[in-house]
Image (cartoon, rainbow, N blue to C red; front, top):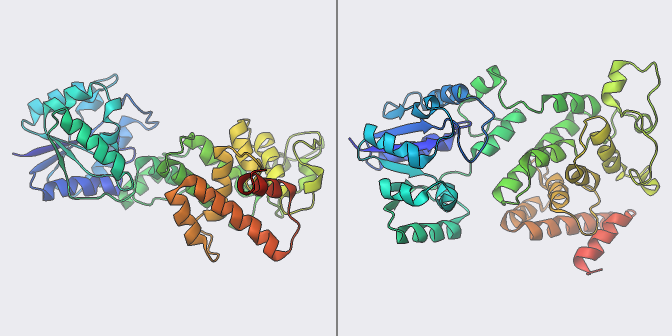
Length: 396
């Protein structure tokens, strides 16, 4: 019997997990052993092992040559592959170990990687978009004596991390319907539900949908372009970036003055707590202009949503105008706002392609488009935007 052992957190199991495992069967292996991690040493799951096992069983349902082995779920403590794999090889003698391209690239960060490569042959999929890194890692480990076979299969660009954040937004792309239904039925991946409730009460439905798309796009860029930002911070900055946008349920003036003693609970939920007007928070030259909402939004994010992280607040505060010398977060939210999948203006696909090739060049293209758009319409250029343009294009 020719076995393949395929381990992972499966948090959640997505379509490419199953597609990779099916492809291994097509390569001549008889059985694929799906091995969900117990307590992985390199990441936090946030979802119980029992839920992950249930989801994996749903995802693998109907494929008779899959074996789900819950060995790690009963061992307790942190499980290292170098310690678990010998036990699996006793149970499935002669098995090959299947990993994804990202895992091969990062194998040097694993516990006792050289011990792992000596245990059994390794089967690996390439990672789309990371070919140079993959080839370098492949040559390195083969030079260490690893027996590595590269499968003739490029997985689609789906990750469990992105699947989790999309599930937070009620989007289940890349998950089979049974897994999606399980997530909804068990209220998994819903850490931000209180933010959604407040935000949906403050902005109109179309604006709320835009906020979710911007949030999703920002997280996707952070993951795909490996920007190194905290995904939770990116998620919140993207979600709340337009919370100050005017609607019938939001009155800017209420956000800038103390709530009356007799304010009802609805008012308290949708407007800021008592604050003093402070021009460092909302510049007077922004009042009444289209850019005002970014400053109001940063204020509301802090006062209503309880966000005090300066990186997040900066992403909200400058997402519309930009400014000189922007942080990575500020550039990301600025760009995601104009690139999210709901945007359909002429040239947006070109901008998206530029962004996916190079973050800094993509950001500059977005900034130039925004600047040129104001100039073309003959509107007043807000000082921060002019300063941003001079800083990045004129070296001022």
